[in-house]
Amino acid sequence: MNNQEILDNAPKGATHVMGGNCYCIENTEDDYSEDGYDYLTFRNEDTSGRHRSLADIAKIAELEAWLHKAKATKEQGE
Image (cartoon, rainbow, N blue to C red; front, side, top):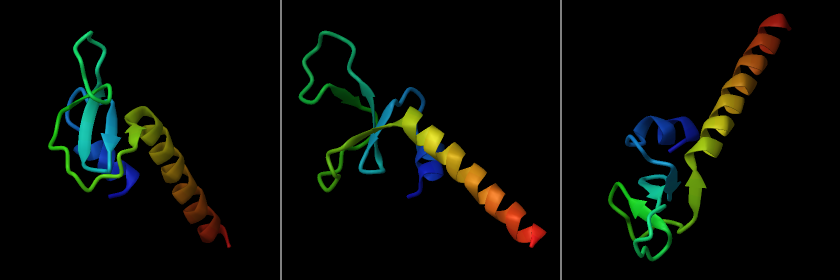
């Protein structure tokens, strides 16, 4: 799944993704959480275990779109 697809599939309220298909929100309550996150979607056992910020992914997707557009514009000008 690419970065834009991760964003498109994120449920409302999600702040992070793990493994590309497990969305979660940082646990800001005093409740005990094993890793500091509350999971909004099923937590697969085959995920990488690395949480990625959706805000960071959004910025990367924005830059990827800009780069794609710049390359297309350059190709049209050649």
